Image (cartoon, rainbow, N blue to C red):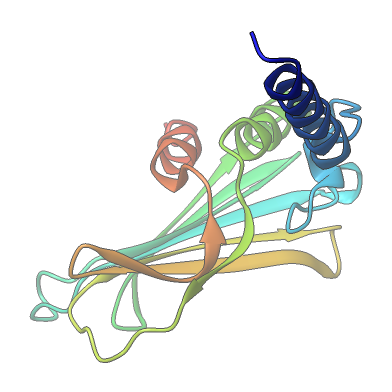
Length: 167
């Protein structure tokens, strides 16, 4: 092997390893250190909202589910008209489970871009509060096979976990 080629190869490897080390940094295992994640330590209530696609009012069903340590509240509506409200008991363990789902499904703020005229899609929103003040919010609009808004992560799995709390 040519000595000059060998020197170039070693130098290239050193540069690549240096770039990887600098880029990756040190991971302390907490996702909320990354930009866009909520401050998990202060969350006392988590709300999930599903906005149905545009259909005739008699078929339209959107809903919101709010999970706190002592209660779960479900509101079903059709274009803003409340159709049903359900209130159920909860525990700190249920809230902790949904908080873990929030983390495990990497629910976070991001930039998905803005909608340029797509209509008829569905929407999802996640809001977190410290019991009084909103500390995190994001929404995503699914339309025409694309997502718009500022909410990323596996929202479908998160929604399944939240919906699973309803008796």
